[in-house]
Amino acid sequence: MNKLFSNNVNNVEISGIRKFFNKVTKVQGAISLTLGQPDFPVPKNIKNAMIKAINENKTEYTANAGIPELRDEISKFLQSMDIRYLADEITVTVGGSEALLCIFAAFLNAGDKVLVPTPAYPAYESCVKIFGAEVVNYNLNKDFTINFDSIIKLIDEENPKLIVMSHPSNPTGAILSRFERDKLFEILKDKDIHIISDEMYSSLCYEKYYSLAQIDELRNKVILVGGFSKMFSMTGLRVGYVCASKYIMDSIMKVHQYNVSCATSISQWGAYEGLLSSMNDVNNMKVEFEMRKEYVYKRLKQMGMDTTLPKGAFYIFPSITRFSMSSEEFCNRLLHEGKVAVVPGSAFGTGGEGFIRISYSYSLEVLKEGLDRMEKWLKTL
Ligand code: PLP
Image (tube, rainbow, N blue to C red; front, top):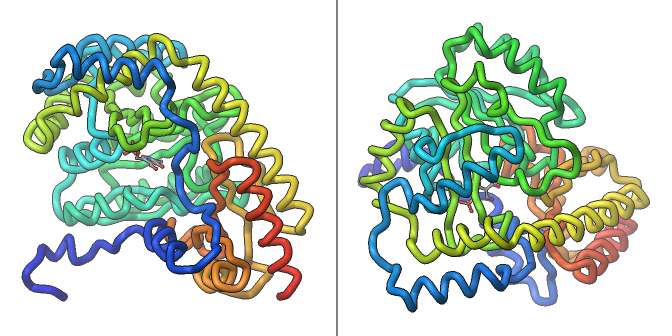
């Protein structure tokens, strides 16, 4: 253990997704299906709004919570999904990542426990560890739906302070059904627990949208995380948001304020314009992703892969257990022998072992080539 650095930080590993992405560049001719980044350009209106913001010198600090125009539009956007937060209950952050870190910082003391699904986006576990708190994993069902018994048992036994929900899910593509939402409400309503609902992929849901944030009785317990990285294909522009009741937001704000002061002014104006005039682009991207999802699912099924059809986001998470290899070994061999990079499921926690994550945020052409190569390689096993 390196004594120079915080024990908590020593305890955190670098992201397995990045690790694999970095390996691809070293394998000549390999193609990558690893990243969670849409392959579309930022919508034109958003680009123009950012250029205009620069020319109008809108380059100063904004309010800590973000520009009021954007917070108003986020409030309206959420309302279109039956989620009600006033502009005052919304803080614009530097991507969803900063929102998550601020929430964990605001809530956690060393030794606190946080329920995190497994498999899940790796940042939850790492953020919890950074604050010296403890991750308690809850399992999902075989089709990646919520395992209620696991949650009920762990809340009773472990007394966690927070539970993380993440729908549509990275890496599984699962969404929250109406049944799951209502059942979770029954389970959580009388418990002394707060819920982080990460809804980063809300604009990419291929069925009707459900969220715990839609339930008014849970208002004081839910903290919603959203953002524009995926929605407007603007990952590098770093705009996300957190929504919560005022008394919760006051604490989150203390962290956000001393962390970044505010999200980048220019990017905020871009996201604002996006909500005003780029929803058609969002819809077009969704149509394209849905087509790719169907294609990738069909191809994997044809290869005999055991795969659940994703209902949101742009990832698919097939099982590889029948190949009797760890997910790391499978991905290493696929990369070196088959020249395709996908992410080992183990990068998403213990529940991800036995799976691989394929991102379909790549063009159909790249997906076809990647899947052709994978099919060919599988035949050599
Ligand atoms: N939450 C989930 C589930 C994600 O997959 C990601 C990014 O991949 C984030 C949050 C962070 O998003 P951002 O790029 O806005 O920080």
